[in-house]
Length: 97
Image: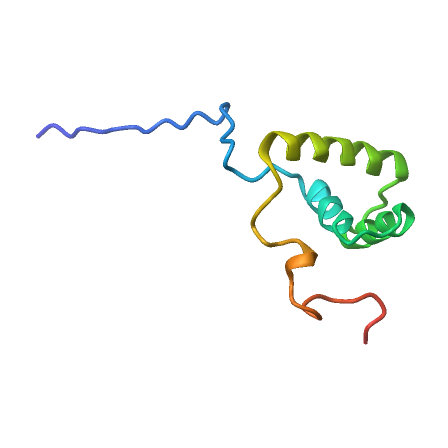
C-alpha cells in the first residue's frame, strides 16, 4: 500500500495586514504603558519594573519609534490586552499589600 503525504507551506515573509503588529515583549510593555499617558520618566520606571531589567531613556525612545513604524504598517493591536481595556483593579499595583 502506498501512503500519500501532503505538506502545507506557510510563507511567513509576507506580512498579513489584518494581523496584530509583531511586538517583542519590550515593545508590548512600552506600547501598553504609553496608553496610560504617563510622563516619560514614569513610563520608563513602570516598564523597567514590569520587565525586571533597566530600560534607559535612549532605548525606550528607540523602541517607541519602532512601535510607531509597526503600528503604521499593521495598525494598532486589537487584542484588548492594553491596560486601558482591562477592568479596574485587574492587575497588581505598585505598593499594594
